[in-house]
Length: 316
Image 1 (cartoon, rainbow, N blue to C red):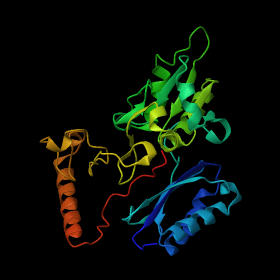
Image 2 (image 1 turned 135 degrees about the horizontal axis):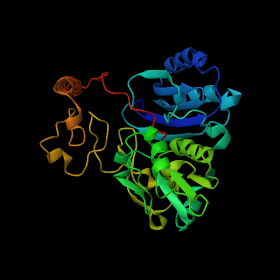
Image 3 (image 1 turned 90 degrees about the horizontal axis):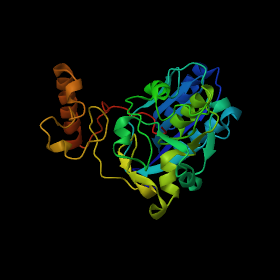
Image 4 (image 1 turned 30 degrees about the horizontal axis):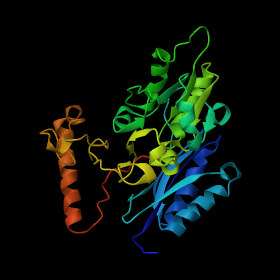
């Protein structure tokens, strides 16, 4: 294996971890000892992470985690890259591993019914099923399932309010509709279906393994997916077979560039794009320009610029 070949592992698990804060030092030390980089989020409700490094080292971290009976069945997704996806190792303590800001929601005890990718088409083709994309608006913009509702949310924490106000989810004749929800890798729709059940929706389903597993499993000629799927790493977007897509990334807001964005006068590499230009101050733009200048200098010298923004876990 070439020393420049990196394995990326993305994983999450909802599980009760009352001692999550005490787990941080040993877990960070183990990752650093194996020269594994990335980000691990720990909370009372579980773990969410993307890490990368030499394959043996990444697998060693996964083995270390699975040695804990609470994480013995931890599932992960793999991909390879020729350059380091991360430059640091961080273990962060959070209130939630995916932020919804609704107390008492536990996917461990009340998530919806899993639906395998090969069965998903039949479910969402049922006219009695309301299909909801639980991702942020910029993710939905570049791809989604045919017929899915776009809640037009900017953060996952806005989803509960949308659910409460949605006409499509309004009770008909005293009976709540069947609901199918999906997200990138499974974590958001597990939590959103748990929320739906908590507020009285009995028939709630979610796509097992998320969009990524669907694109990996279902052949293009049988697919109901339209467009590409945004991912939180250097690929930016993927299509069927998880082949990297054509979208670029705005390094300022970390969102995909819309078609024609680089030709806009509001676009400046590493500083702004049409989507985020109006939302940052001159001071923030000048700081971004300096960061971009340092990144370009490091690239010209074939050095690693460790000031790069650490991406979020990509399991969403």
